[in-house]
Image 1 (tube, rainbow, N blue to C red):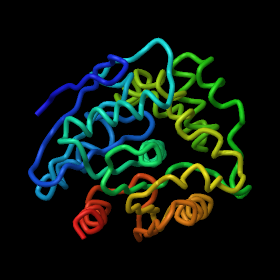
Image 2: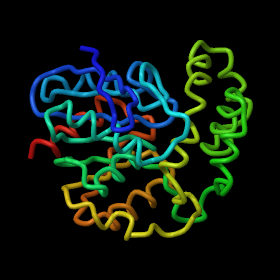
Image 3: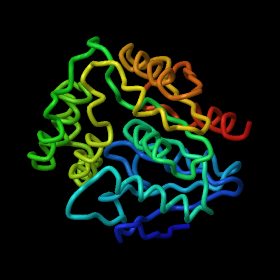
Image 4: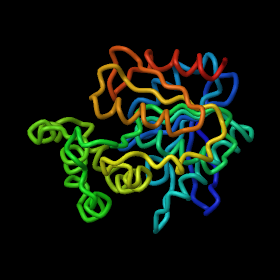
Length: 262
């Protein structure tokens, strides 16, 4: 069922609701929305155990936007969805959505438990470093060039592979999402500098937390997730064998069900 809720600053946020059971809100990563990416399939996989709320982050899909962006507004968007879900909820975030979910938990939102899958923090020098100017770099580019920059310079995909992506229908969707890439960059913030995480950033998280990585994810990502597990008070850590950053719904759904229901 498709619905909308109005965030604190007046921005309309669109969401889908399906299933029965405790409320669970899904928070997407970059270039994804409630109709494109991993969350629609995951929502379906979880609907037998939870009432799942899958929403378009601001600037994406059917959600509205504002003239200026601040991470705090995205936290308020999530708060509005949680309020629509009954006032409290479990929250699962993937990639930059995981960083947003953790920042929301640290801000004191009514989150009962939070799971973060591979927020793209960089805590060592084992991968090519993301430029410190990446937020401005993304803001200064036209949509197609912003997607290419994100795919090559930030994610690290080979240029020829990204060029081939322009030939598939999904490229149009990626370009439509491109203006929100600086939002994701701001959510992740300075945690891409190859330096240890600042534990004080996560010290206020007072709810049960689980941080997860895939067994086939690169070493730098595994190191980052383990560091995050140490930085978030009382957090658990789990590795899902055979998975990478594009984790399958069938692989993560049992992890979420087990953590949220026990």
